[in-house]
Image (cartoon, rainbow, N blue to C red; front, top):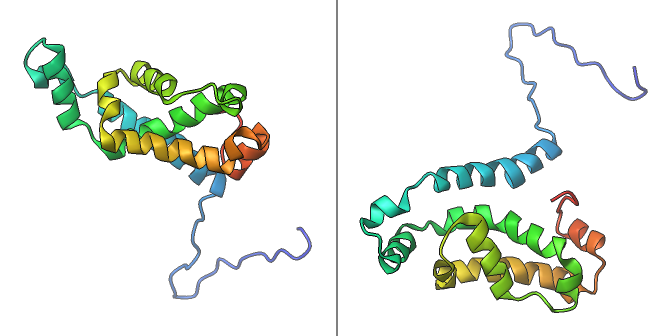
Length: 158
């Protein structure tokens, strides 16, 4: 037995066990950064937006998506995608060659939602908040990529 480690006495004499199981912080990190957004994305992706709109008109489909779009779900799903997009192109980010247009096109394609939906104020605000956090922490790309990711508690294997 390691020095300084006490063996717990599990012989409880008439009293309930007060031992609690603690979730390791890494498991909690995996749960919150991967599993929860993935589950939210899967639940969100199963919505059939075209049947809700009731027509084939692109304009009406976009409006229906806009009315049904859940901002919190978008935030859970988009945040890791934005991190991955920016950090996989960190040199372009540091050289100010990435634009919101590039990012929104990527999100539109990846999530299968109309580009116009990403222009909604509450959706744009989510995107801006995530990118501002990265830009401020990384000092617009002056901080080396690995150190910036560490400061944001991001895994290098995004």
